[in-house]
Length: 374
Ligand SMILES: Cc1ncc(COP(=O)(O)O)c(C=O)c1O
Image 1 (tube, rainbow, N blue to C red):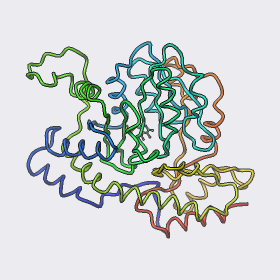
Image 2 (tube, helix red, strand yellow):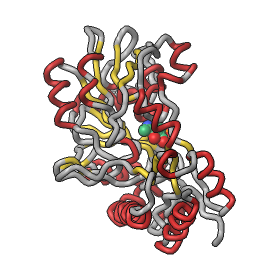
Image 3 (tube, protein in one colour):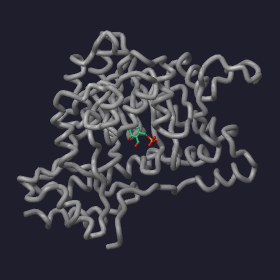
Image 4 (tube, rainbow, N blue to C red):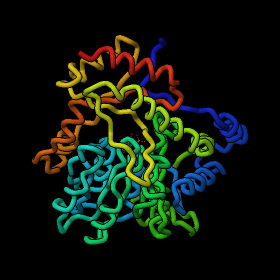
């Protein structure tokens, strides 16, 4: 079988048509109909009223925090098991990330451990829907209400995921998405913040656009430090075409995940993220497995090497934020124990996860894993 990459984008709709239209009409900056249309449609897809397209998901998280006025002296609670962008964005504002371990089954932030990390400086909780699995938003919302905290959803990996019938991105004051090339919906590089709060929306679009007055004249007078986080019309043209296919692509990722589970069901020592909770739909961004080496008979590194010999690409999982020199040097408290995160990092990895994977490819990958078991 030919080489199977860990992920590749699915560009099977109107991408070329819209990009061609943007280029041929000369609308290639951040002005142009595709930016507005992409914002409108993606926000609606996420059960939100407002969307603001930006250059990538990291910036979307930063803009979300800026829009809420989070800064120096503040603390934001975030899972230690996440992509470093979640924590970086908090650091960009001058605030401090405070880490919480993952739950052993969902691999999301352990909601039972959040409350003990709340202090008088805590301003927000940033739940991250890891690998497209929704966090337990009822518990997080209750904590936010009790302590008067903001919620910023890091929904970078969870486009279209459902929690009790509502979409990811609609459970927070403001949420951030990534459209990096491996995401279920992609623009190559890109991101968006979504919100249902008009005030927060206005602040976000003000700071995104170098703090030009929102409705006043462009007189080049700026009252605050702003950012140029604008997305171009060419990139948004791809985004719009992707949103049109969002449910189709989501269905393909979910199907792939189900196939992996089916073909690996009888392989002892292979552990998956827990299934979607009742009334929820996780979107299976990356097919991740954790290898219990005592039962499987090999450490995950040996399995990764074996898959590579068979032309199957894989990726390691995140190293916890509490293990990052960058976080320690920034002044975060990296002491304490984070056993679940460390277990995931040590024993887990991603299998190929592109929407376009065929059942034959997945069957082949699973057979390699099954046959290698000692
Ligand atoms: C959980 C999480 N947050 C934030 C980001 C940052 O997104 P981007 O790569 O678009 O900057 C990612 C990217 O993969 C992510 O997985």
